[in-house]
Amino acid sequence: MNTIHINESRLLNRMERMAEIGMVNGNGVHRLSLTKEDKEARDLLKTWMLEAGLDLDIDKIGNMYGRRKGETDDAPVAFGSHLDTVGFGGRFDGSLGVIAALEVMETLNDLNLVTNSPLCMVNFTNEEGARFAPDMMGSMVVTAEISIEKAWNATDLKKSDIILKEELERLGYLGNTDPASFRPAAFVELHIEQGPVLEKEQITIGVVESVQGICWTRFVITGEVNHAGTTPMELRKDAGYVVSQIATYCRQLAGEYPGLRTTAGLIELEPNLINVIAGNARIATDIRCPDKHILEKAETALEKFAYECTYGENCEIEISTLTQVDPVKFERRVVASVANSARSLGYTTKRMVSGAGHDAQLMAGVCPAAMIFIPSENGISHSVKEYSSPDDCVAGTNVLLHTVISLSGS
Ligand code: GLV
Ligand code: MN
Ligand code: MN
Image (cartoon, rainbow, N blue to C red; front, top):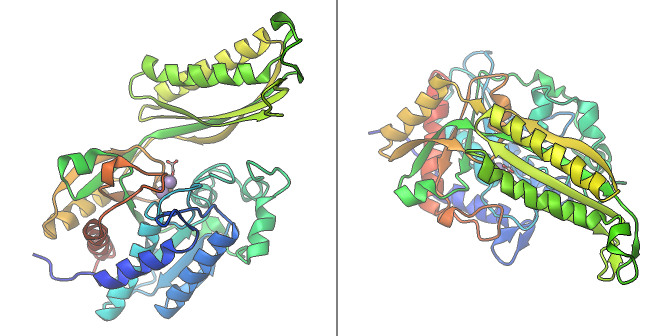
């Protein structure tokens, strides 16, 4: 049995302290990317990283790196997650992985243990995509899935005059480092499961082997504002009617294709008044599937349907892809390292697919990667009700510690 363990109270106290930033309903967290709450969270992390003696670096998309020297100058073993949250989200999604990464560094400091490879912890910018699309933006820029210019020009999904690069500058997190220079030897992300499997099966550690693909699409419909009572039904150009049909069809698609999960979580009408036909309507859909071909087929069907119902209502439509990430399979060697570390610590394990998207999914494109999951109470996440027990947070962080030690050849 292994004897090296993290400092539990330091980890849990820091999680508590971080959850105070943007806290809502006394439990959840509302900390959208590049808001003043995100800055406060970043500043706190920065203080902790410097106190831990890490060499701090910020890149052009605002990703924060904390490096610790190794015996060699090899590429580092990297680990981390994100501090931003969805609106009215939880305190564990992302934050656990970042604070656990810091705890790994602190534990190694306590033990005076210098790993063979250098280590690097990361806080990725805008993982959630709740304010600026695409999601997983920081890791997408690192892996050149999107250009830095495209990311900088992203606008706030609700206020189109707010530009991401200006927010980075305003908050003091527009760094100079080229994101594409981050090429670690391996990347590991600890995260809550955000689903019901581990809790139901009473398993402590999920060994994540793959992540399903994601497609986000925005449909903007232009119709004509008119009077609800006087406009004959056949003369309407009702943009609201079109988006409601798209939302319904999006849900129905999940019944037509195996393994597909579909959501229409963002719908906006203008002018959004009870007795006025909507002249403009926007809907954004989120479709996910572990099978790339099914995902593509479903997306094509949705777009075809959107055109048909738009023209049927004499409206106009603009369609844009906000996020497109393929399903990934993690590298066997890193997955095995997670599984071995968990077993050596005496934790129960289960191999699984991630339903949520993660930065590790992008990092897998440039280095071997894997993830560690811990149970989520009632499988709830992206909600203020999100909860994972202190024991499970500690267990996941111990597994991260041992995985990092093993991958860094120490
Ligand atoms: C990330 O939070 C996702 O939407 O899967
Ligand atoms: Mn997350
Ligand atoms: Mn999330």
